[in-house]
Length: 277
Image (cartoon, helix red, strand yellow):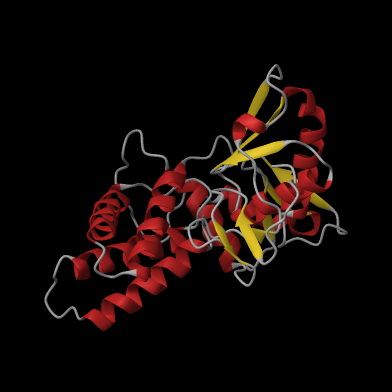
């Protein structure tokens, strides 16, 4: 989105969905991304009528990462708009946008001190199980790391030996390693997590929202069947599974469920999913 003249003092917007809020709202209640003082523009308003457009997919980025990129493009005066996590630009701006994306990738790697030498491991050939073990063991050993949008792993050069050792043992399962579902064909984990976040948000506002209840229960059922999504640790995905199923059971009238418990579980799930979408 390019910044348009903002004549509406006291208002802020979500750059992704276009929701409008009072200026004291720091992040979008639907998308969980930081709000901006610049009103978003429609996709059709990107460029002139005869300009070709390009679409960039940023579903694997965090909301903060997309917010960082959006701010860079706005400050550079580059026409752009968002459709959820999809960025629309003029084809003529491709080179400038690629440079902004590269810069945003570096800025969005908060766990590494980029003044220190780093190295990269390509993870494309890892299986889902190997990827899950890698994330778990990096966390257990307290090794700083980050991922770019291609899923490649960045680490400190000084940790090379121990990380090579971890890679050498990825075929060996941990005794207490958690197992997930067999997988669901055609399901995009990013969309499912977004659906779960939105459903929990609806119920947080109104626990009796019948559509929100149905969406939450149906989405939780899909989550239970999914394998571990690429790029997420087993502990994180395990929390998504457990929290969504617990809330689904409570909403479905499981014995012992009370309104206060449902409200608490809804808030907990919504806040947890906000960090993931």
